[in-house]
Length: 518
Image (cartoon, rainbow, N blue to C red; front, side, top):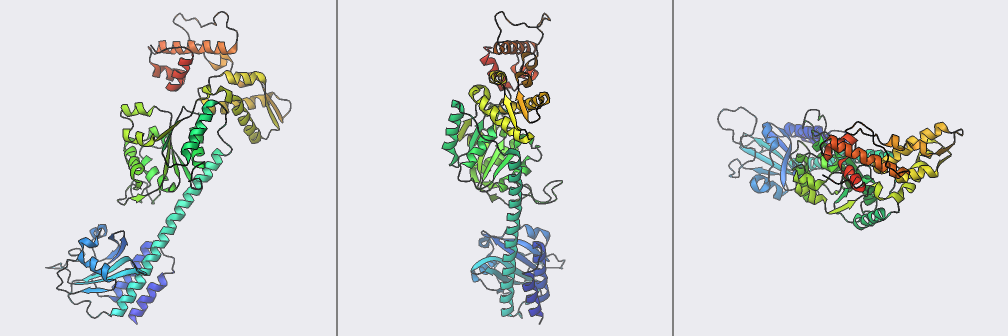
């Protein structure tokens, strides 16, 4: 009756709502009640090794073991026999748990009696149940049929636990994917690559060419040009389009959390890690990972990311167990990564891994013919957002937009138009109709640039014959740049900071204005 009650307990637990740890503990409780042992262990067979997942009567270090059958003959016998095995007390096969029983016994701590049951799922071994005793004949009177039934039910229990864990992990990942996709849809809805200029057409051809491959793509371009749009276009045209595109802003990751954010962590891995958490690489498994501002990643994280690119292998922070992911990598940067490599700020091997297929996104000043199309798009989007019936751009305003240099690129154009709509709406007598004039853009020379004093303390004046807006703007820009360079003793990086520009934008602007480096 005792044996029947024990088996019924295991069978009932198969359908009970229990955590994995509780299932394992209750299974070992049944073993302790029915088998006269000093120690017992529940082992999961993972790949080609047995891994302890629950134990009774063993020292804590036993839980860290990874037991390959080829190195432990008794486990190899259990694996191959596929039925309960009782080893004789005088067996010359070493026991894997010799000297690991957590008992203070005078004299010998050598295991005399050993029992092993393979845990089966059909014809597949999913684990093993072992029991050890210091008494040589502790297991002699155990019923063979009971041991077989115990092994069968324990195998079913272990398989059930593994299935539940897999479902829970899948549910966690799907939940993270859903949140990422919802965030992406909210933040990026209605945005597309717009333009007919040669630079944009060439970029579209590059996207079509590389999208359906699994090549890593490095998207290059200044701040605000739309690198993320290119990434989404590549993903949408790829065979992974139905899988998630996960976006990571590397510049926003604190160095101390960057590794955890990308690779995940286990509970207790560091202060504040109160629960095990999947990283963005696991969430992106099967899909695409977009690493924006990849040049900002810490060197230590770069080394770990390189292994993922090479081997498809990841390892959560605090875990000693690697796993595999299938992720397509897209990366974007406004930095000169080749220069960063020379400075020791970026790994050369990772740079070349990402540079399989580079795509350059042209700045807005190189695609002036697209400014009108972009302006129409942004105005219509903002019209719907603000609930207006019509927004119109005057010819003078459009001409000003096309003559501007746009150091902030497409993002700057978008923000400027939004401000202009608000100004124009305040001037309009009709609450549903807005007409944007040149004055609403706030791009006049006196407002667009600040005249810097020269060494004599006099302000720069327009040269004779300069009457048009473009000439006036270029004159003021030359004066500003030269004054900034004078104040910084020719240091272009310092001059860029003084002018509030990115260094690469300053070089492009100076080159267009005919200012050479000294």
